[in-house]
Image: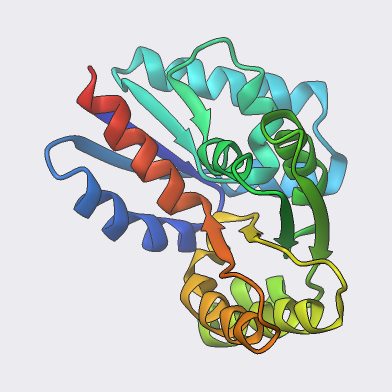
Length: 223
């Protein structure tokens, strides 16, 4: 199969390329970066014009022979969802479906334009899960400055503080953006140390690249 991964930041190519190559070694894999899709939506919102432009882009790429297109930007999610082709999907959809397996989830977000698309997605696929949203101010600047260490630490510290202060016993953490997956291990180790001290059960950390690649592998096995 020929699979195109649509990114809105070049750093996401670096994040996804080794992951998808390892998970899908027998398929044709491509990465394309369209930074202005995200910058336009952040500045003007999901207007009719940008929706039309993204839909035209998706149609063109499918016509060029790509079997699947995976959009790795959560902000673009609703526009991708509105495109009438099941072979085009957003990277965070499988993660949202997994979230339905948990009772109480803390949803961590580092980009303001991601909050509403993620909330709508999770409410659709996990309607019975109690969701709490945590916007981590300042983290995104570390990511755009290519400081992954500071980005991961900022995310981990904010989530750990929320776990310490909250009266809610979360059984899952959702890292809303694909870029946040690099913090998964650090977040898991930190919050599960807190959970152990508080004598509560282990907390699962969900990230969209991992969930999506498992979904794609399963999908292609049945092709």
